[in-house]
Each structure stands twice: as C-alpha cells, then as structure tokens.
Length: 595
Image (tube, rainbow, N blue to C red; front, top):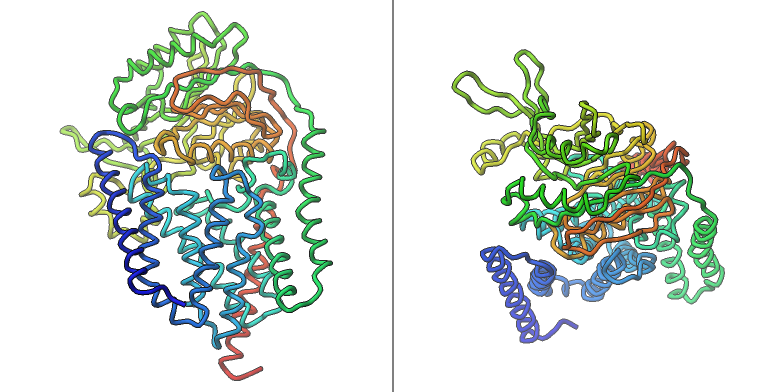
C-alpha cells in the first residue's frame, strides 16, 4: 500500500531540505577553503531519496512495485555496507545480489515479453545506493567527478543485468550461469577501457581481510568475484526452495562449504606462508600537504624543507631507499632533469650517502625536438620564435646519489577526467568547449611497457596512485623483474573519508597476488608497509607529517596469477560471447515463430 500523499510529500520535503542544506554547506565550505568531509554522502542520499519519493507513484503502478522497491533498496544497502571501510561485514556481499535476483525472477514470470525497463528501474536504484555508500568520497575531488562516478557507473552496472534478464527469458536453464559470465565480463572491460572505474570490482570486497583471500595468488580479484556471485546464486536457490516448500538441506551444505572451505584454505596458507627474498631497508615519507589549498600554492622550496627534515629524521647508514609520494615536485623538464633545482638539492643533501636511492613522484613535461614525431598527447604553446610542442607527464623517477642517470616511469593507468579525456576521437566535438573552459583533451603522456627502476639494490615497480588498483596491470611490472612495489599516491583529494582507506586496503590484494612487499608513500596518508601476506604494517595517522622505515624483503618468485593474469575473466568473456550468440539466435527464432 502506497504511503498517504501527505506523508509522501512530507518525506520528499525533508529530503529536499537536507539536500539543499548539504549543498549550501559544501558551497560554504569551499568558499572558506575547507573540505567537505562526509557532506557528499548525506547530499547524495537525500537527493536520491527525493527522486525516489517523486517516482513512488510510478513504482506503485505495479502490483508488486513497492515490494520490488524495498528489495532493491535492501540490495543496495547490503552491497554498500558490505564494501570495505563502511562496517567490517564483507560477508553481506554473499547475499547482496539475492534481492535483485528475486525481483528479476518475479518480473520474468509476470511479464511476457521481457520487460527490460522494469528490471532496469529497480536494478539501477540498487546500484545508485551501492555507489553512493561506497564511493561518495570522490565528490571531495570535484562535484562533477562525484556525480559521474555514481550515476554513470550505476548505469553501466545495469548492462550485465539487462543481458542476464534477456538470456533468462530465452534460455532459462543457462540464465544464472550467464549472470556470472556477464558480470565478470563487465568488470574486466571496466578495467580496460578509457572510462575505467575499477573501485567496486567484487573481489575488492575482502581487501580488509587479507588472511581470508590468500588464494588470490592463483586467481586474483576475479576469483573473489566468482566466489561472491556463486554464493549469491546458491542462497537464491535456497530461497526459491523455501518459498516452494521444497527441501533445501543439501543446498545449505553446499553454501556452507563454499563459504568456509576457501577461507579455511586461505587461513592455512596465511599461517604457513614464509616471506621470501633478501632484505632492503626502506624509508617512507609522508609530507602532508593538503592538495586542494596547500600542495600547489606553498613554494616548492618550503615543501622540500619538510621532505628533507623528515628524511633526515629516519634515514640511517642502512637505508637503501627513500620513497616520496606522487607529484612531490615539478614541473620538471625531462629533457634536462639533472639541472632541476629540487633534484640538485636532493643530491646535495644526501651527498655523503652514495648509492642511496630516492624514488619519488613528479609532475613533468617533455619538449619535442624539431622534427621529432609527436605523441597523441602533444600540446602546443605559442611562442614568438616558433611554437613549443610538449607533453605533460605524471611520473616517477629514481635518483641515485653519486650517479647522473635518472630513470623515468610514466603513469599509464589514468584517471578519467583530470588525466585523460575519454574517447576523444569519438567526442572530438567537445574539444572547443574543453579548451574554452581552460582544460585540454591531450591528457597525460603514457608508456606501453611497465618499466621497473633498477639499481644494485634491486628492481622496483613504481605504481602511481590509481595504477595500484589494477591487478593484472601490476603483474606486468613483476614479469619485467620487479622484486618489490613502491606505491606513490596523493589521496588527500578525498579528505579523511573512506576513499584513502579503501585505496590502502586494495594494496594488500596486490601484495597477495604477486607475493611482493609494498612500501606505500601517501602525501597526507595513510602511508604503510605491506608484507607478502598482505598485512598492513606501521600505518601512519592520516593528516600528519611523518616518516617510517622498515626492512622489506625483495622477492623473485612468480605466482600463478602473475603468469596467467585474469584467466577467470577471459573465460567469462568467452562464455558471454557464446551465450549472447545463442540468445540472439533464440530471439530471432522466437520472433519468426519458430519454437
């Protein structure tokens, strides 16, 4: 029964009031150069609540519309709360999709032909709630980024469900296999294209509990996604048996086994694993310059005072590496790095420590010489004596005290929007608008290979910020010889909310997949060391200038996942293609009246 009109309008008014209040607070905070914190979470929840109350009469038109709305809301809450850092209950992911499966089944039974629009309405509602709860913090970077990450990503998540709904109507016996295949295929594609947003990959859900997913060294995060989806399907089967008053004891045994056996295996692996490799002493610096209002306004020389003070506090004769965060300084002209004042200052400050390596993120640019081929990221600056053609780089370098050469790595997994203009060849007509707004469609320069930083002390994988979320991508460093991973990041854009903690937890999964120790330097925190089992060690406090050091073990062993990558996802893609082709043929035959 739909709510009384007066109650509905009261709730709508309350949601709009809270939404406007939070919107005003965010604008006011920005004018005072203060951060938004958790305000975007309240803003989005109230905004979507208002949209839902406005559309409530439409939901009520279906005989089961309000029931389906309740189930889809429940699904969004389970998936959002079950994701890392909200509440430590990742096991909610095992039932998060079940309410959506119930909705899809009831719509399939109630309507002929398939009502994709109805399925989309409820599934989209669930995924908006999931995205809001888990990734609201993106809005602290920019409002447009938050809106795009939530509403656009929720729409993309609907696609595998619509394909599943179609397959369910045409090939019911294979329909739930298709849901697994389509979802994992979607996640894999979402890791590869220019509009990539890998945050809500299902396998990331257990990142807070590395002891429970040690078998990721074989499967990567897609093994976790397969695990979660499989348990959801078995619980859905139990629900259907219970509703039909059929026996489901055997299914309960299967579910219990599927939940417990992988965790027991993982705990055995966790407790029996012995770290491998020779030890190197590494110092990690957390300078703590707030990126919205400090990092790019305080003179670089003043910032370097803090970098060097923290470094000298922690560096000893045994120190092999110092790690600074992403974009610690710049713009550095790559054509002549050795003459850049900050690099010269670093060399002078540690001149008594020949062989010490400083690995740091930098902002940089490369000037194309006359006659040199331009990359697709080329930009132009008009000059009186001829135009200068150059490209911008978010990079990592290794400064070895006593040596002239400075190897450079270019960040190559880019954040859509600030670092890459997605599909610029297709959306070329937006270029004049972007240019007028002071932006550029050129993006940031990348490289094809995952180069490692080599020295007599070892071989380092320089993963910059976003890159550390991509499992198969990180394995490319390892196949190129990396013995340890240094993550350089600046998570202060998100304020002290869930984002920077989730990013830290995801690093534990990279350690397990590759069995590589990790040193993580984050500008505002959380910096830490992560061992080969995925344990987070010596985590710093957020929003504190500090330094930590520890011996890390540099490993040469190669895991199954490093060798084979996301083989589960590739099998899902193959399965999806077969299922889609069969669905297409079945659909054509059905339209032609052939049974």
